[in-house]
Image (cartoon, rainbow, N blue to C red; front, side, top):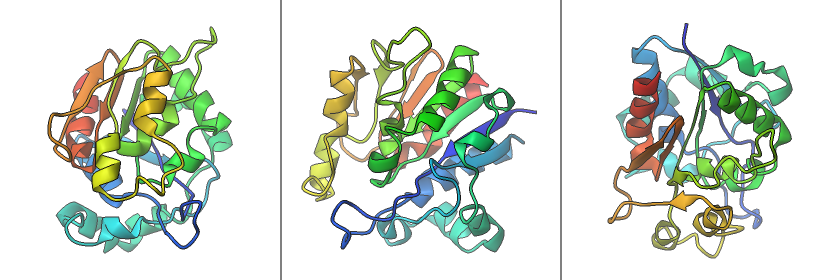
Length: 226
């Protein structure tokens, strides 16, 4: 049985608490649907375990599509976001791939989660797939391999572009420039010529998608490798 571990956030707002954020629902829902159709088993983990807040913008027009609506309307699916696993409850050997979802919230709790980094490193070094979409790549910023090197160094990656932050009018709210931080770590960052269109990059067993529109394509590329 092929098993996928989804990583989601526990953070509900930016540094400025009057601006809510959270999981970008479609990035989880689209990937879940792709993997579900292939019969993969799926588990959700978060840095702290437990409740996952939703990014309010992800459940409103124009971001709120059929797949996200279906998840939001399904009590069983929503219950999965009330009680996520914590990293210490996860045995990485049980999983063939890890998939980091996004939403600006992950910029706060993904980069320094040692538990999530451990799982990522172990899956990667066993030859499993490491993947992310949109801001999910913040979860890969500080992940080091057993030899001390950064997982992303010298590898092709994509993720939410700074230009997209500006267009989304959150460039003044975000705690750092994720695209710039990726480049500083030696990652070979790429992006689509046009903002907000689907774009996914595969470098060996590393699969990354640029923005919310890329979730399905990213998941399909992961599934193809599996």
